Image (cartoon, rainbow, N blue to C red; front, side, top):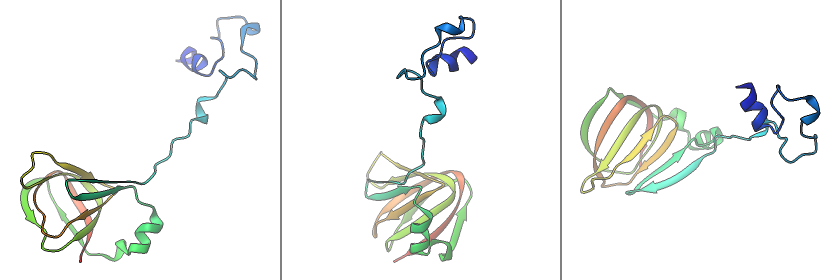
Length: 137
């Protein structure tokens, strides 16, 4: 592993003489810790379902999500029809939502802010127990 780290950072493996190390100004010398990985919000729409992954805490506060009622269910499979638009925020869980008339699905899970349109009929296939805040409009 040490040689893999040394190789990835542009330095020579420890079994080579120290005078074979790359100079500090070499473009190959870059610490692995310099890689910037962030969790960013990403919004998509598929099959009429809008999903925003990892919305900011400020957005959740602005919407008042933490004051919305909560609902949960164990792993299960059931049909559902939305008589009005629902926005929900999943605290826990993993669900495949199959809109009626489609063999395709939308997968939602913990950390997702989801909007289901009024009139949508679908089947929920819950693989990990759900705990969510929800609001109907």
